[in-house]
Image: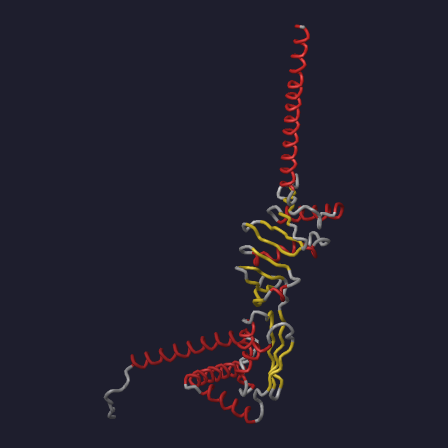
Length: 337
């Protein structure tokens, strides 16, 4: 019987090698599948849920990518402008401005900041930027800007309160309780307010308030406060009398309290003493106007009186000598006779 021999057929070695490869592939698949199965068993969700999560992540990434591309192309800005235009045509744009809480400051300064927003669509208003501009005004302590649909912009202002007047280079400036400058004023508007002077006095306003609180009985009588040498205060009262306080917050408060007690007993304010130097904790030096002149005049008068007395005594002695000389001559003549 004839046997057909095919060229290129698989040899026994090739068949064995192919069979071994298949076994390895099946073994690897079984091992990989078992590992994935073990991982899925530890997860709190099913394989279907995992597929959904992966799909959401892929779609989210695609959306972010589309947004980035659209932003680079300017699509959001165009959409915002279109929405603002639609809102404006619908009547949602700034037509009126309402300002609240203004009592002392010039209200026109607020309108100058706000009126630039007129005829703008409500959706395009930069509320935060407008508030920052209002806070730059010297009188504005705080501000709140809000939209009142359909066409009103409401500005609520918290004003600073004038606390004292800063005098520098013969100019007066209102300041608040923190030393923040408000506006320049004339002497008429500064009447009744505490006047501060001295380099750096405005930065020491909170310290001065604390100092005056130590002696509330005489606080209303203080008209001026001078910050001397960047280290201590001189207080001038409405009677124009001056108290020189020592350095240090505690020392100054103690000295002022001592002065208040002395005034309560001896009525120092309104008296003859022009100044009280309390820088030495052990004693008080007082200066009375004209007292030195009075002492000098008294000394001169006493010296003059002594000189006049001495001159009178000398003159009396001379007169006695002169009157005694003729008597001696007469006695001598009598003796000769």
